Image (tube, rainbow, N blue to C red; front, side):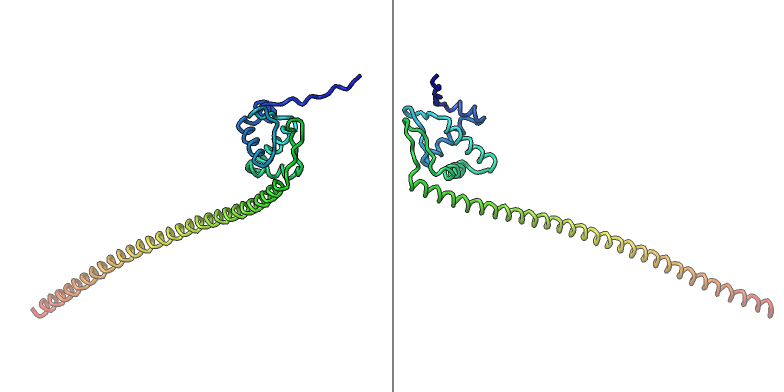
Length: 202
């Protein structure tokens, strides 16, 4: 019994989107980026006819954009560079990426590496800036606390000075009162002496 041939039927944009659980607009975006990078799809007129090997390419691109947070163009570059002879059936024939396209992909991959390094440096700078901002906030907080302590101490000193002033005023009043009493006592004693001698010598 002859072995049954498996027919690779073309898939539409919606079928690709349903298979990968992504939006149809994402499928179109991936396809456009792939074509710009030199990848070719089988077509019927202007419509793309996706095959099962195209699905795997889309799956790899989606994985890179989701897990590694790469943009679509870089993800396409990585996928294409991993498959230096990536092919897509075009009217039953294989299309091989040209040397110029490979050089372009290598250049783009280098750019991606530089971009990744720049992003890491930017993340480091952002982290340092965040730490400096936190230190600045902490410094401002400590300065505020110190200022409040100094103001409180100043208020306490002013209160103590006022208390001392009040005590000094009371002390001065007491001294004045004692001096007045002493004066009255002196006059009283003098008057008693005069009265005594007057009575004595009549």
